[in-house]
Length: 413
Image (tube, rainbow, N blue to C red; front, side, top):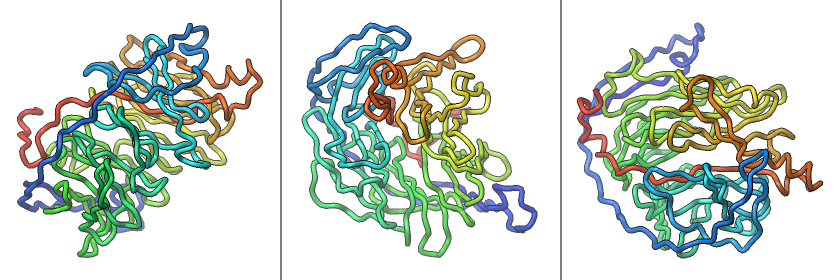
């Protein structure tokens, strides 16, 4: 594998004149051996679907139980929205409003202080709700610590991987031994390359250099691709072709979203990476479309400002419907549709679920999928009981691309 080392120094990411540190690019060559991954998937079962009649929102009411399980994944070009209202997790068709309760999640998570994180596996046939795994044939709890980001391995999702107390850990979803595959002095974040054969992680190397590293899916043959100075890299996301890596770099006083091309760094600017957006309040919840080279990321609310969403350059800002409320990006659907939640009461209170359609002529169009605010006003129930606390999109990923070492840049010219 031939990769480039890119420098992410605080002065390179900000315009501070007081720090003389400069960005450097040094070519290094490594040889990587990778391990095969399992492609076994869980069987699926049929579920009961309830169709609701839309009025102002596509979905007027969420159905009661019983919750039928996550059911079959949507087709290769389809997509669904999963979201939590009260104690239950629902999956809905974004076009018809067909909705089903798939799981009761609150008892699994206890008394959660914050909305749980949702992550579907690459096959859209298994789901993580924080550290609890839901599959079509049952569920079991991951060994991952609650409120530490736990991820499925790719492409099959046969294991989970996470960082806990600086250690990089991995476990089959069927249970069993937890493997420590750490290779840094301390890890911060991790995700899988879409090939399934490699991982990318951030942290402090054994040589005392902080950076972003690529390694095999067993944590062997690591290569540092980004050098960091006074920074913590907190989140990663790949395009589905495995060619572009996005990462959030927190410098303390400002947080940046960067993109880079580990297999072909020559296509980036002189610094070796692009700065996509920045926020003094921080950035989180990076979501990248698996169909297009577009992204969305959220800047959290502060005492003086609502949570806001930034989108890829070339896309219009979010429409005026979202002025004056906190808005959080949740994921992409096919055909350029971004799913967001709005939180009109306060930053951490449940709210409403929307689709922003960017594949339209002119300004993006919005669809109100479900309004906890309307239901609360109509029924007199508290927004905590009837609002959407969190959401994620569900769609199977394309076939895995080759690992980084096998990329041919001419394929992307």
